[in-house]
Image (cartoon, rainbow, N blue to C red; front, side, top):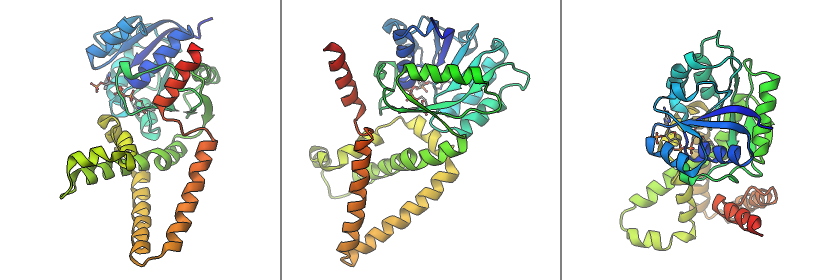
Length: 310
Ligand code: NAP
């Protein structure tokens, strides 16, 4: 039996289209509606058969929906909620997939009239790639990864259960925490690493006295792995870093201090200190591999497709 009658996905990019694929694959809704700022993305989603209806306005797209999924960059939430608020059905669940939660929750709640009889269950599927758009999505994107839910006063037990079920169908492990705690954890494991990748790729690309061709040619030595992260969507990352500012600035400070300590270790030939740090980081890498969090998405997708064909 379907979990929902009608689901509307706003923003049919990588994450929105991957979720739409799961909903279609597992028959979780009778109808899937969508709206995106890019009409060509909506058209593509229709052609791919992952949505049933596309709309000229976001307000029209949500009519009679019992689930609305915000899957745009978080900076767009305020405007979207203002536009859809007068068109929401009583009892509708609003969820999102945004990578920062304190700001996302604030934007949804502040722009929804207090009398609106809807439930809000914010969340973040911690899975993704550096690609964008509906063609980049795939239904196994979320498998084996964590879905972090940040329920609040406007969530209900029933709504929380439905959203948990939805992401369980996507084969995610579901966890729950406050938006503030989510943002602190993500700043360390995602936002700071992305920021460093953006910075390193910019630095290496701008180095004088190096041939650009050679940098690309020999990139497998390490640079390539940073370019994968630094190739992520610019709008999304601008919104994430600006909307988790306090925690990010604290972590940058700490990172700069640790980098300067490394600089000193090298300058003063403190090989034992370098060895100790690198041994510690190698141990962390082994723990990540053991926790099965290491497979790049493309590799995972390929494996999953091969397994399905078998
Ligand atoms: P994406 O592939 O770029 O898709 C987002 C889509 O939303 C784009 O087509 C974009 O159009 C559209 N959009 C922007 N503003 C809109 C508006 N006001 N109304 C309707 N559509 C609008 O991005 P994504 O990677 O799926 O990311 C979407 C959300 O998922 C973000 O909040 C991100 O934080 C979260 N997330 C991403 C990942 C990841 O790895 N990518 C992982 C977990 C969570 P334009 O391009 O024209 O702006």
